[in-house]
Length: 518
Image (cartoon, rainbow, N blue to C red):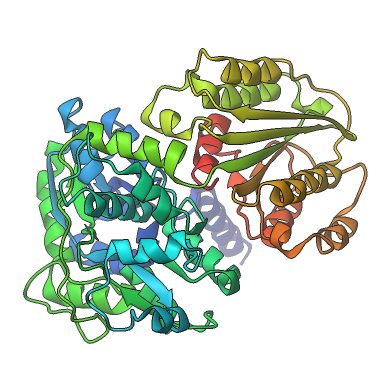
């Protein structure tokens, strides 16, 4: 009996020693993907059973993905809502071996039913982008849209609007800045991803009239129970841009596997399942869109053939067209931030002053017309510095002043997180009174737990006494070092923000990602 027991224990020990977690399928392809594809998890699970191949999805932003592909990231595949910008980069970096569409979702405008009735837009196929602009510039249509440098839904929407105002032939010479400014005067909410935008819209829906997003996202919201008022979908008759979710092959050696996976995704039964579960239209003619999709004939806007045109449009949007922003950075300079940590923080901030010349770095840099506030804290809030960026030349005086300030940062003392964040909200409240036509956001960078000043309960009580519009300003904490996930999540949840992980990604990359939400 003892021998049997000893044998069983030995076997159990060997099993435990070998049990290092789930065994990954050796037939694995690494995929750079847009975060909106997370809803395809069950489909991909069944695809793995059918083909024997597992897709390891690395979810990144659209421009970040373009940068990684251009750099030869090493991924086997890429899968974003559109590959048009990535394809334009082929002139300097050819990494896309093949691509084919897997599903379709036009970018549309979801309009509250009461608003659509008032404007005469219900089931009206003759609404134009100019009609929408007329209501937006008159202050009667306030809408949400993602940042086009961070999310493809905002990107293709911007291209569609700009192309319509340019007579459907957008070039570097006919970007209509005044018309775009009038249209985007109605943008009252921004975000770095289509999913986060939808969540933020639900949170602030009573102060908004609609949202520009993928048709699939708008339909999903209408089918849910979170809206106080359903959205009518409007497709401007002068043209829209459709996301076709191309699966892109980046390594020619994987061609056979790519063909197998693509064939599975384009099977009629799988296309029907994708349509049913994700509200995206089928990409093959054998499967017809069902009754959930409007029957209006959609005009597809021609996509610009020039990378220079797209880049000029994106920079114009950031620096001239959209409402300017006021970004408030709450920076922990306590003793635990000394050494490499304060150096990493400085590097991240300096990158935003023009030293980062990558694709993502250029679009994340501090923008013309932007207000910046830095709130420094250790065991107390001890310094506030304010800057206005009128000159975005990296060698100009405005960004040089920011660099001088960043280089002066030093670490020492305790950690008064809640006092510092409350100071940021006080700055924002004052800013809203003086310049209400700005986007406001707060970024919190800390590597520790609160141990000085207000505690969490007192902060919540003080927060709830702020003006309602100030409470809508989102805080984006960065989890770093020994920072408390619970405290940071509490701050994000209270404001409708999001925690960013600075433990598993370089801080400079995290700061660039957050810029897409500002």
